[in-house]
Image: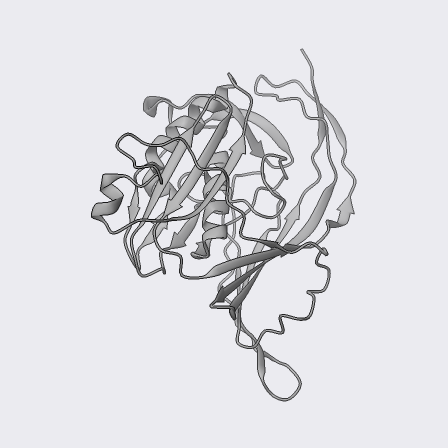
Length: 310
């Protein structure tokens, strides 16, 4: 495990007329899997004054409201709206957000995804509490049932125990992103994988690389994680504090990929893909009033085209 951590840097930028335009920029860089060369940074800016009529430089024309995934299958004892007796006992009556990702049935990573989802399912995050993915899910080891599956290391995929667990953290990240809850610590993968939206995902690696968020809604939040043979859906139940809108830039600063032949037993063939950078913005609103703008900047490395030699 290697990696560096840059401390929080703060700066203030004022718009014309002396009004504070951009509040606090928080720059975070976290440790990640040894060999990874990603330069991925999360920039969180608190907007004091937001001009909702202007476009964000580099953003695509499409601005989408908070999009929820289809409701997951009902839990035992749940009412028609999906609320369980345990939720009602906590005062939880509404779904905040949901997000789904897909995978191929029968792949080794499916077992790891199901184990991770089972660890998340039913977790209650109290008001003001911080949720740590690694603390809740724990080590991904053979003794705990995890199996080898493709894992990103640097610009390649290799088979490692617990591979695929990042699909769980990435799905949770998107549910948290769309809920408006505060994201405290997140880092994208060094390579972009099509299972996740570009720039909207969180890699994890026990114990150093974690995905951490805070329940700042003022009410309990319950996590529901449901799997099928081909999909994972994570739903957050509780009380929504902010409305969410998002924008993303087009990929830019593209870099070509290289080719390699791997003779190792852990080799996973790869088709190769360009590296690129992308920006994603999350806009938080309350009763139509802008509250905060957050920018997530990600640099994805080129994906080496790998042929596994026998």
